[in-house]
Image (tube, rainbow, N blue to C red; front, side):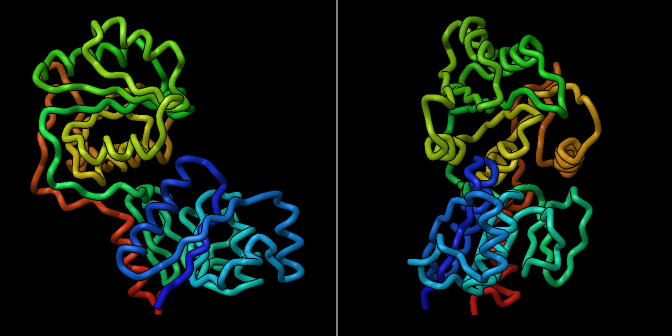
Length: 302
C-alpha cells in the first residue's frame, strides 16, 4: 500500500530541513509519496477552514499524513485536514493548542512531557543520514552568524579556527558560512589562513551539497549559535566540536547546547585540546528515524 504525505512548507531552511527529514525517515520504513505544498496568505486558510475547502490540494490524492514545521503551517494544516482528512503532524510546539493536532514533535528544551499526541525530541529533526564510513583526512567548519542569543566577534572566532587548523595540519579543511554570517567574515578567514582552507559560500552552493559534505566529513566544528547545524552534524556520525561564543542571555538554544555538552556529544575547544575524537560509546543520533518509528507504533500508517 502507498501512503500520501502532504508536506506544508513555509520555505524557511530550518523548517524545510525538519519536515523533509521526517518525510525521508517515514519513506525508508513505508512506501510513501510526498507532495510539497507552499503555504500562502493566512486569511485564505481561515476561509478554507470555515468552508472545509483546500484548493491547493484539489488535484492531489487524499493525504494520509499532513506534516508541517513553522508557525505559518499550523492553520493550513488544520484547513487541509478539515477538507481532506489525514493525520496532522506538527514539528514544534505549536502556536495553536496542542490538542488541535494529532501529533506534535516537540524539542526537549520546551519542557513538554510525553503524552499520547506528543513525542519529545532531542532538538530539531533533519534529513542527514548516519555514516559509519567517513572519508578520512577532511574537516569542516560550519559558521552561523548574528543572533540574539550570542555575541558575535569575528576576531575571536577566527582565532579559534586558526588554532584548530594549526593543531591538525594533516586535515583538509572546508569552511561554510550561512545567511546570518557577516559578509566580512570569510574574507578575513581567507586572508589569515594563507589560503589553506577551502571556502564554501552559501550564496554559491545549495543545501544538498552542504548535507553531502556533512555526511562524509569526520571532524566538524560548529559555531555555538548554529543549533540546526549542530544536530545535522551529530546525525551524520561526525565528531563535533563547538566554536565558542559568549552568550547574551539564557534561552532554549543555550540550554539545549549545554545538555549536549554534558551528555558528551559535543567538545569545547581549549588551549590544550583542539582535536576531536569520535566517541564510539555514544548512541547513534538519528532523531528523524526514531520519531518515524514512534509515529508508526502509534498507528499513523495503518
